[in-house]
Length: 634
Image (tube, rainbow, N blue to C red; front, side, top):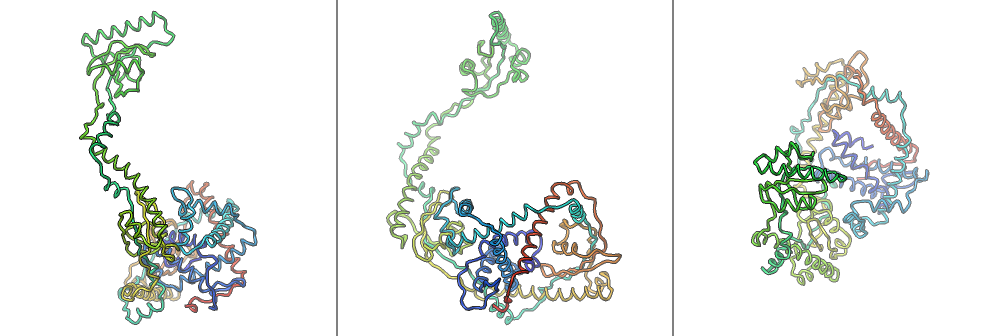
């Protein structure tokens, strides 16, 4: 599936992009498209039509996703509308037969599970909680109503159930794992020669550019765009308008002076002579005499730290000379704290009794405990007061703004005049991209909701990041339109040059490959004739990043050489054509990791995916399908 697109992309990033785009495609493009009419159907599957309008709708959704992935400018590899539409039609057919099979097999998603899934979607949540109005607005911005969305989500979830059922029953046996490891650790000896896409040498006429522009008009469509008028409330702007007087600030300073005072820390050391809780009176007296003797020695000039290291019973501080580090109020038992916080710097306390025994405490330094002056604290207090008052005012303003916007929904002017607020106007923006205020996805979604875009009403107030509240009204709307030719002339010229350069490289490459396979020429002969160097790749594994992924994949699908080298040709994403010479295949020694549980899981996942794709192919082969070539529908 999507093979032609894969042929136009390369590397793991491209495969990731295609995966991200195709996985949710079922959700947005399976069923219930509007329209029908008398047009020739794009396909008929078991008697049910897939209309041209359904195909166009699904294709438009698909291109929107591609545009979003590539930042609004599609690479030339995605420029062929017919190829892309054929892939979309193939997927619609496969999804149709898969849904019929799912219904026949009895896969069902109940209402409770469906709504549980919806409520878990982040796109419909506000502050982590499902929001019914946001749900409706988000759907409306995508041209959906809840009934259609829920039907398609139900079908998509049922398909996931089938996929999970196949995954849970897939298994492998040891001989398969052995074969898998042999293939995974296989190394192939390669040489390659690449004919470059000489697109820059291709001449393109104005007539060809104009024809392409007219034939592929859907590639050059500007999406719907709008401008909105909006009123924005922000906490910062309200704070700037708050006026304070000196008395308010001084009152707050006096009220919270204690809280402004920094905690006082004291750096101290101690000596502990421990006394157990069940000590006798004689032991108590002995401990007190010992601590008193140490006090006398300190007074006599002996070093406190040396005595602590020698005599202190505190295992945590003795080796550090009794050092306790910085001590704050509340950290020590009360008798110890009282004595410490009554000392002067470099003073040693009298013996102090606690439940741990007898202590001598020495104070080294006092820090903190300072109260900043009013002048020093004034700016911080003003900021705090402004924030408090602004928070109160902004919610009152937001409530009034919401009420006025609802009561007079045709314009923002009454609300702006009554509240003294400014009306701003955005730049043009689309559903998927915008600048300024429209960088916020919530703004874009609501701007394209039915109420704002079609009913010309004010939006509800929207709470954005950074404490901002916005209400908007449609200013102007530009429906989707084709870009002027002059704006896309260079893009078309580049695309046509690349296409012709690719064709030339492919034709030359195929002729050279034919000369090798039918005339017996070697890659070196081709190099001499063309002046193109042969690249000696050497032995390479399938997980290597040294070669382009498409070239590597092609090399590992080639038949093993039987005494003679085998050759293959490949048209690459950029239009180059590469000739590949495979001369030998060998199996590297497998690591223990490759033979373990991880390899079983990788193999089982691969087998499950193969079974799932095989089921789709089988169902499609058995279905009664009539398909109209996309080129005939243009």
